[in-house]
Length: 172
Ligand SMILES: CC(C)(COP(=O)(O)OP(=O)(O)OC[C@H]1O[C@@H](n2cnc3c(N)ncnc32)[C@H](O)[C@@H]1OP(=O)(O)O)[C@@H](O)C(=O)NCCC(=O)NCCS
Image 1 (cartoon, rainbow, N blue to C red):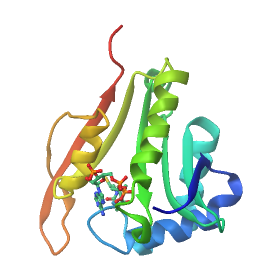
Image 2 (cartoon, protein in one colour):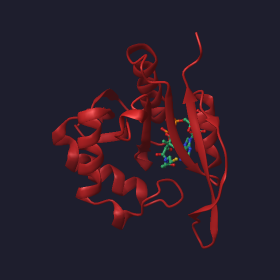
Image 3 (tube, rainbow, N blue to C red):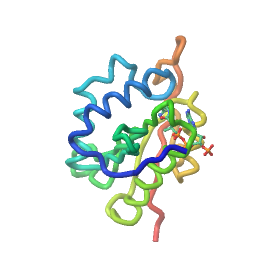
């Protein structure tokens, strides 16, 4: 079990996030982007949106490097202000399977559930072959909302379904 602290990302985490996301993208089949698509613009874009309007939480190791990160933010138009989307979670391959992803996601959902009663939906997507990730999200209360046939290019050729999932605030 790595020794880490979960905390909000900072603006000066951009370089560490670039390195984390490139390491995660190097193993195909998880993140939507390949290594060559993990650019400073991509990382800077999600970090500035998350810092300004949403959330970015990191699992920071004792040496300051990042074992994982999760971010989400609203789409922009006021009609969607009750929805958090664009959700991405990435745990460094050296630390996958050790509870970091679950700890990051639980912390995010704790914040949403207890501090953001205005948020009624949290959305994400997973490619159908990433069955472990889909099961993980279901264990956190997300439900499968459909099946977008042929939406994602598969590793090794062909296309597969993208699975839209959402957490819905329970009615009170
Ligand atoms: C998916 C991911 C975020 C899970 O984080 P993690 O720290 O490895 O997972 P945890 O140890 O907290 O375990 C949570 C669940 O994730 C799943 N999981 C574990 N390792 C995984 C892996 N390498 N890939 C996919 N899912 C994994 C397991 O089902 C686990 O459930 P369990 O505790 O009931 O066994 C992480 O493995 C990752 O970044 N994978 C590559 C990128 C990716 O697939 N991102 C999601 C795109 S939709």
